[in-house]
Length: 173
Image (cartoon, rainbow, N blue to C red; front, side, top):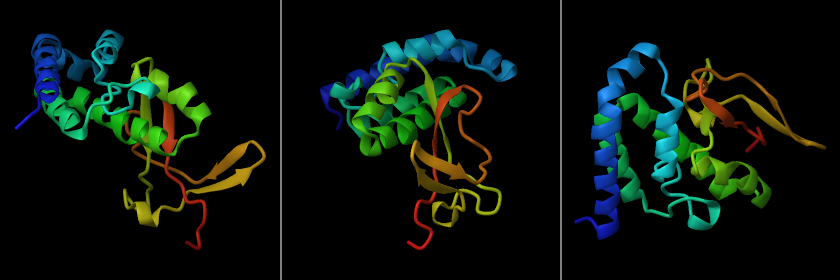
């Protein structure tokens, strides 16, 4: 049984999906693009930072609420639900869990507000999406890390303003 908050989030997502997403889904599919206004509305409604803690600019909802909202959004437009999914987890989830305070301030808070969309790069030509087998390396440098490798099928890359790149820092581990 859902809590009152879970039901409220699900109902808001259902209304948004029915009223905003479904009527324009065919056109978005034809154009291959999600309108900036739709992304802005999703940010205003909290769908782009749904599980991000309030102190990091998000809603602070649980993952059940996120799943309920995501299912409703998918009913209205599957492509929009995929963007929402990639943006929330892994993009926001990785930043929240592993990012520094400076990274959370610079990237997570605006992402949770829907100021921009995040993407992620895991898949490699020779390993697919097997995270244990990736070859892309991240080597510590004076300015942070230097990435050496290649990715393909970067989720939300066309609209993503920032990307979480999965890489190996210790190949012997």
